[in-house]
Amino acid sequence: MAEINISSPENGKQISRSEEDRSFDEVIGHIEDLLLEENFQSLQHEFLEKYWQVFEPVEDNKLIYTDIFNEYNKAVEAYIVNHLKKVMPQFTVDTLLHQLNEKQTELEGEVFEVLSTITDFLAFKEMFLDYRAVKEGKVADLSCGISVTSLKSCNDENYKNPR
Image 1: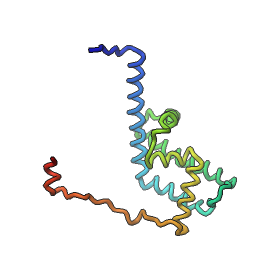
Image 2: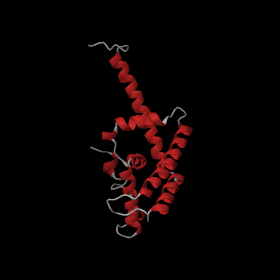
Image 3: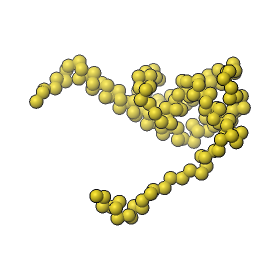
Image 4: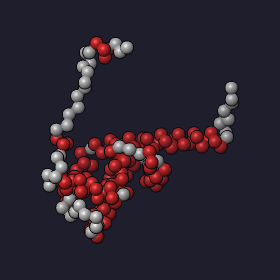
């Protein structure tokens, strides 16, 4: 059986890497919670309502888009950072940005879509164009009629005694 040398650089790097992963997962968990908060949803909705008519589904970008993008970034980033610093006093934006950049190819899900609207202009513009399409009735707004139900009842005999 091979002996593990904890003082070797490889093991030290592996330990700090797993601590970094845990820290990143904790931050993402807090951001996921934040995305569900009414105050955050209101902030995002207010921006969409205020500017949705400015964005047009054409390839050319207006100069005002940059101003709106910067205003949105400032407000959303400040909201997220303030929240994270309350729940994680050791949190730093630089660390999060570094981790997001390193893990960019493996990131999926709503939390990363929202974060991309802060850092990626095209994702930001797409968010407004999608909202505009819903407002103009070009796309059905399905968010009102979604419900989740279990396919099996908890009283189902197969559920209690799986094979």
